[in-house]
Length: 212
Image (cartoon, rainbow, N blue to C red; front, top):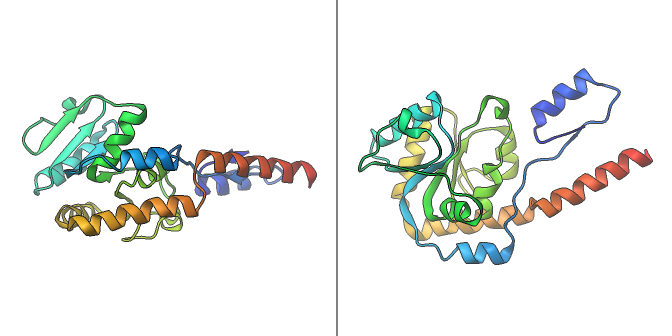
């Protein structure tokens, strides 16, 4: 079995002790040429959340905008939870390279887990740093293993910490933000997180199991 999540992997090993289980994290498809193209995007000094809503996500965005953090949302159904205004933009989903432009463009990208991601990571965990975006995401052991806190990405464990770090990121000088963007991209390369790298790791694990 392959799973992206360490916690799920541990559960599977306990449930199926006689079967091989391997953890293969999510990744990204941003090569150097695409990264360099996206790096020309002019920065938007607002936060962004590129995801579909639920009650918890809407509450997080509400906390941000009510405390001076302007946000733009890209997803389906946000209007059921929040009303657009000067502090809040709501836009349709973008896909492909247009979505990656959004991930790069804003000062920070908010990331929130669904229940099955708790303690682990999700696809945005790699897509945002890969484009040179600044990730504001839930604190988890896997996030900290992948990206150094406050250098490559920013993590929160509570709503209050999320708000404080969002405010800090918007107040950050542009030169410092550029350093974070560059560091995030370098780290995605260092840890070999491109989908091509993941495919090679998967093949190596399959060969290991077959020849064991």
